[in-house]
Length: 148
Length: 148
DNA sequence: TCTGGGATTGCGAACGGTTTTCAGTATGAT
DNA sequence: ATCATACTGAAAACCGTTCGCAATCCCAGA
Image (cartoon, rainbow over the protein chains, first blue to last red):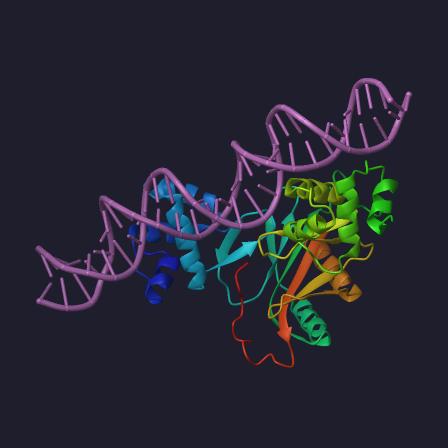
């Protein structure tokens, strides 16, 4: 059956090859932020004859077609998520690596204002917050200020 | 003479070798955000027998000693700035590559609040804004994101 | 349905930034 | 000054990513 992303690709007029179909399926089913290696790992489970080079090429293709978005979380490799209309950011749980998405209109407005004050018009931006769960923040919290 | 960073290094008890002295001087004099290659370029001008490997090692050393801070601007290489007490962020002029530092207590507070609402305690974070000058923003303001 | 030719693939080699290995050298505590 | 130790330079290794090339695939057109 046709995955969400596959449909999107066809709309954009991309040539649908077997491997693109598989990668689209993998990405459609993903609810996390996989890196290329992870996408490849999942794709191979569906069809073993997909090379990592093709995954790299396809990710780039889909990124250029604005079907997916690259997320740079500073860990040295590119991660991806489905492209969405609304701007959001990421909170990374440093303990588990879990990534939580959030959006804040106020934050957007403030950021916009700051740029304007500096004499600039925003063309892009990114915010990442690294944190640990409040409940057990004591263990490895690097710079803790108070502890109730 | 002794550079600002060199003094800091000695305070921290680091062994002061000739090349560390030179690199400290280079960094003390820098008012931008040089990458390793650039630091090496400047260091070699003072003493030609400094290898890039040593620059890499020294940058890491200084980073671990919290004398300098790594800045990841998403361009695929590490950039550095002197460590400062106050948290600040960067606005990158996509036209010229110029980097403008800014701080916003309100932004910090809001970010803190968002994390808290999500049940997290912040251990780190970063914000980058990419923009073009307001005065001549018309020309290429359309070309939103560029890839790092 | 069959076909032709440009697009796509797999493989391995190349790449750019960074780290490491190792033998030789310099540092600072004594 | 001496000596153990930490540091350095050069080159190789690394890691994520891209590229070159020959083989293969897709699909518009017949």
